[in-house]
Image 1: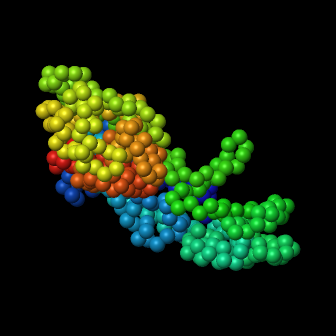
Image 2 (image 1 turned 90 degrees about the horizontal axis):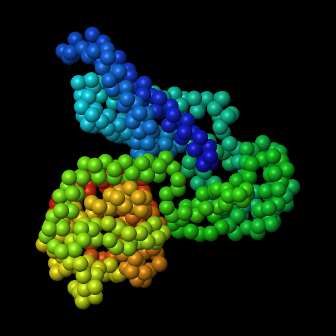
Image 3 (image 1 turned 135 degrees about the vertical axis):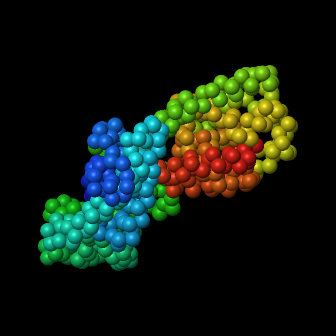
Length: 467
């Protein structure tokens, strides 16, 4: 299925699923309020106005439900899929959304209006309704009407080797509704042959694979499809990229083939931006007494400024001023060259376990990573994210010996990252550090960010704080 078709299908699915989750929440209250249900389980009947007290949860439930489903890969599958492919992502998503609602109710102290029975019913009903919707969609897509509407008959045009490879890939995705009816060789076959194939098979489109074919032959096929009014889909894999993913876009009327290694703009990216801002704002408010107390203790325990400011490399290498509670003597940066022989990290990064420049209170701050708290203001200013590769000093980035290491600069740096929750300071090889950063970038999802955020406190509590 073409990306634009998949996008429209996904948006329709998300709207339907959000509606079903909203309906499930209301049905859970209706069922729980029925006298026979309460009496059969020996429960107190809830009051009719209970639902009105928690209706504001819809503002979180409606946008969150599709995002959770997407994070579990629920929409990244063919329209007609095997039941296990649907079952597990849906089950996990319903569980996560239910737990999220329970936490919101607890946080806003509305537990008396949302009994546990309501939440359990909501999780069960939402699973059943979305499951029934998927079954109905599968039945509808197998109907004659759906096949006439969505079934695509295509011709593959290219060299024999290229068309054979593409044919195998299409056959491996039988649920996408694409049928190959003929193949046309760009290596010398007359154009009249393609004309005859178009007229004989009544095709929806022509796949053109042109990596090794002559461009003038490709142009001839495109012009013919243009005249015939048949869609032409050019498989634009002229360049053998290893990591970058290609996407199509447009600027000032010029068609663009975009190669990117970072996540493209999506609802998950927007959710990450919202999480960064509101998460950092909430943490600043909650930790404000701790921030003030720490600032006072830094000032009282050693001479010098409260905050340490340093130029770090941000997204795409753009420098920004990072904020940290000062944990070293004021002349620490001038003394670094004298400690070069003690460096425990390979590569351009400088790390020392028992750094003599660290103050007594600073060592305690580093152990529990409290010196990093002022970076919440960097997040609020848009210079950092809550999750991302840790920002390195500008002078260390300039010493990168491998250009591939700079790809860790392709996303915003973060307060916490994958290597911190996986290895923290047991990692002494800079290449391993970079490998974990690139693993995070290549596999990024909003759900991965949430996992890292949830694992970070445990990594800090274990006592393996920053060096």
